[in-house]
Picture 1 (cartoon, helix red, strand yellow):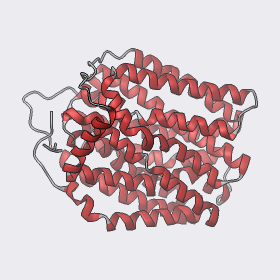
Picture 2 (cartoon, helix red, strand yellow):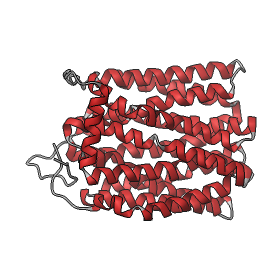
Picture 3 (cartoon, helix red, strand yellow):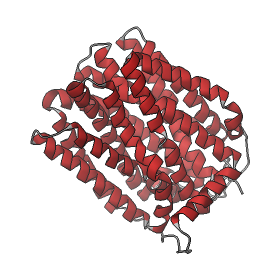
Picture 4 (cartoon, one colour):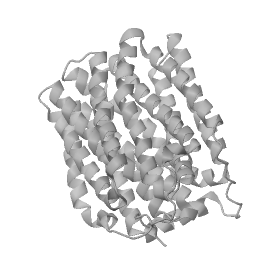
Length: 416
């Protein structure tokens, strides 16, 4: 039976998320992963733009971070059921730390090349693909369904805080010492995430062996989505965001330097503005959002995001562009918080990991958008490419209304 999104009343309210020790550890790991992502994305974009002058190659680095979600998201959702979650999270953190360490050593030796960054982006993408079926699944298990929306507000809020700080710090480091400063900082941060992972007390037994193969278990998750109009609609909206919305972030440094003639420091400051809006939005949602609003915040957040992508591209100056990015972030806060929350609450408990893996697959369709955006940027310039992709996204969102309308329906209970 399809799950729903309105929490049933409980006799005793569960503890707030930050009162749960394991949530604090999982939140800390997420904060590091998010912060390193934004630190490295800006530094990599600046390095490649200065080395090659190709907006297409800059967009392709973003694509390589997303591609593993489409390739491995569903299998990772199945495999995560067969591994102790803490062990899986530990492997993710160690792989990410090793990647940043390798890049730091290469950059210190003066041997860093574009292909090194491409390989590292793909490896980091694999770790990112495992975040939904591993770390965020664990968040839901340690706080419970009734607190999942609040917990995700804090988790996404930390992402948004990192989007405020990460690009600014990355721009300053890049201007002061070069790209090696970013990767050394990443290694130190991952060290903190490793400690937080080791402090986790949460344990759960892997799913018992059933004799079914990976493909069969993936098929069960797909069957649940096919039977649920609300899950189908939720995943469709995720696809639209990742094809028409998310890719533009890779070109923000290009627009900043090419159109507004900003330096590395001010480029980082401009790129952080969507994080400011997203952080404020996440705080407001943590305080005021109610389950009955989740779907509307999800779809409305995407619509605002897409509109402001075009607003950023068409802004007459850097200040106005920063204001548009602030609203981009505000819209993304609604979308991002409710994305994993809705999927978690709508999916039956026995297949949640698999459905969260399918969510990663939908996110992983983003390379289609990155490729299209990169080609548009090479043909018409980065500014025109951002404007066109935002307008196209709004048009497709309107045309697909019959396919996602079901997620706005109101129901009565949340699965346990």
